[in-house]
Amino acid sequence: MFRFKNYILVIVVAAMLLTACGNKAPASEKASCAPNCKYTDMTFCYPQLGAESDWRTANTASFKETAGELGIRLIFSDAQQKQENQISAMRSCIQQEVDVIGLPPVVEDGWEAVLTEAKNAGIPVIIVDRSVSASPDLYAAHIGSDMKLEGERAAEEFNKHFPNGAKVLELSGTTGSGAAVGRAEGFRAKLNPNIEIIDSQTGNFTRAEALPVMQAFLQKYKPGVDFQGIFIHNDDMGIGAIEALKAAGVKPGDLFIVSVDGTRGGFQAMVDGWFQADVECNPLLGPQVYEMALKLMNGEPIEREVLTNETVYYPDNAAELLPTRKY
Ligand code: GZL
Image (tube, rainbow, N blue to C red; front, side, top):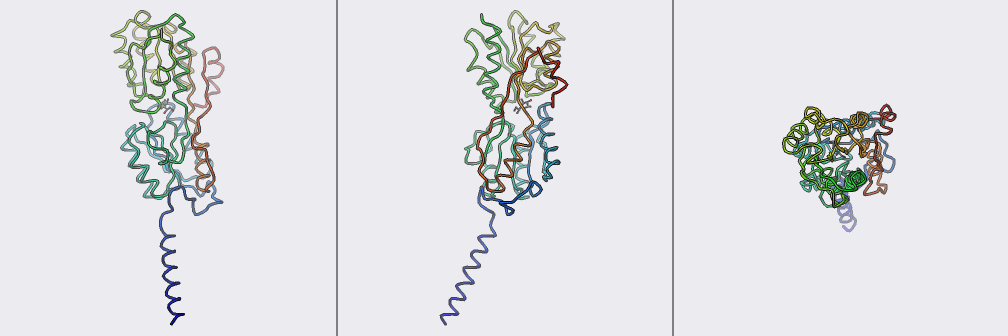
């Protein structure tokens, strides 16, 4: 009798253990191939925010080309700059039980629910490029630019150029995005008190939306008289603004313009004399993000915050560097 009871107990305990093993691994658990996962074992989800700028095009290319080189199965989607599309793409990836999700968030807020769903499904999320306001315990890490520093660097260019003060306009990026919030914050934090931002409007990081904003500015303010400079949050909006400036008879160099990204379009604008500085913002994040994703699959330690090293570009060597630009 005693032996029979033991036998039943063993079966019950074994059944309980099997059931437990069958559940999704809790967050930050390693993949089943750990600790020897290879890139070819990885299914990576990248719900890209859109295709609004040359920067974004280069960012997409970095993830697609690197996935092809490494043999990673990439689940890619384009959210057309809509957060709800990014969230539904993430939910689809959670259903497909991908290994890792990289999230390039269009805006900072509103990610708590879907990040919690990913965490409960045992799928780590790497925040890519822009940041989120959600609690850091809801995601594995952030890899991207220090947007506040980019804004500070732009301010330093205005401070150097206008020691006796000036009035400037700001063409800002997508409202509520980590990039626009950080750049605006850094710009204001570092700008000398004798330089006044007389107006700021969003161009949503696109050429098409920046053109009418610049046209409206030119209806309201006389270039060179009411304002002497413009801080533009990305090169694509800068190129849209240049079209409006040209149509209004403004010439290259009439205004002091500082942009952000350092794309080929931005370098060309420096060669043509329109931009007096271009603050680097590097989109080529694919390799770094995939390397971190593989470490997560193998249960290896990772850095929770990785900020890309960036610089400021100037017209004096823009022509020489332009042919070497990767984006
Ligand atoms: C910044 C990135 C921004 C770029 C824009 O890291 O999110 O979005 O500056 C892009 O060009 O649209």
